[in-house]
Length: 98
Image 1 (cartoon, one colour):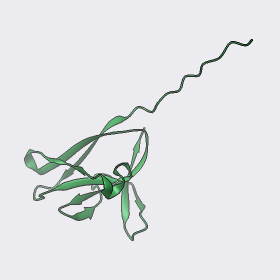
Image 2 (cartoon, helix red, strand yellow):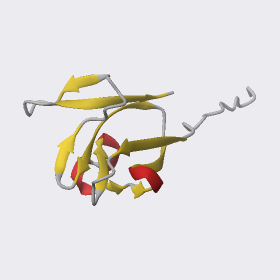
Image 3 (cartoon, helix red, strand yellow):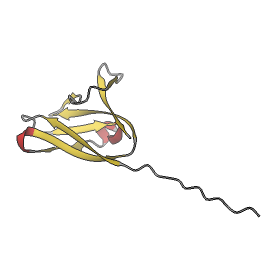
Image 4 (cartoon, one colour):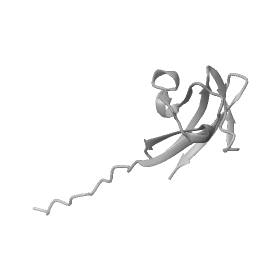
């Protein structure tokens, strides 16, 4: 009888990813994307002193598309120039987590 070989499977380890947006006049900022099922589970950012909004999310390695929603208006991440067409006549920001 051959000895049974055990294979070790590694689960992807999520990383803490910071999302931030300077929007001092905003009343509400959300981040939505492929990691939130878009509008199904938006994540609210917290307003810090000076008008910077921030949220930290645990994300597994992979490529994600996302956008911010500021007071109901969709916008891309001005701090991220990587974008792809979204099929709706606009573009989404792209995030690669390694």
